[in-house]
Image (cartoon, rainbow, N blue to C red):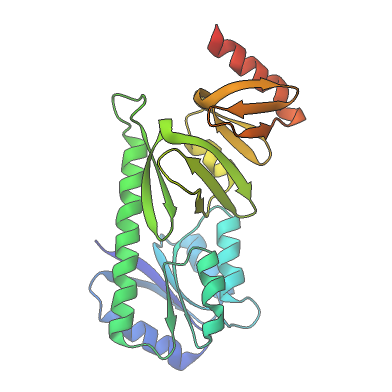
Length: 248
């Protein structure tokens, strides 16, 4: 598997070293080398790119802000951050960076980051393949893939109870996990990926599995595990209509 990558660093020596490392890895194809996030944004708008190696502490637009803008624009890329400042590591992983390289890093450190990029790309490819070719049994054994806890989880749709929005992240409550899975995914994207005949958004912060409803009344729904959730005023009429259709 080959990855088309962009190298971004405002320091010429650091950028030269990064480009040299990229050239030593056969799986990587260098699309462009950029000295600013603004320059890189133009490249990403024109070129097909799988991953970016991005410095964090840059003038005008920091690497973190740049990656945030990509996520908010709905065109996320695989990201490896490079920086001389270890305090940025936590912020880097908050935007779902695949890896974090602390300068000065060795070719062995770089290769480990590349291996993680390739693994993540393979997981995403498998997810896209599964979504584009659903099982012929499109029933209780359908699988939903979600990235959480540094791994990709294959969840049975029947096991998903509900999702809860929390800023840029989402909590997924599933029967097969003792704790909710926290993933970098918007509520809008979740609703687009789940089958609408089985899942419904009932509130700006909640989407539920309609098969998990125990009962509902007075603007609240109770799920089969006893969880009670609010039904938003703007969702109530559609919710009651959907439930009525399912009972018919």
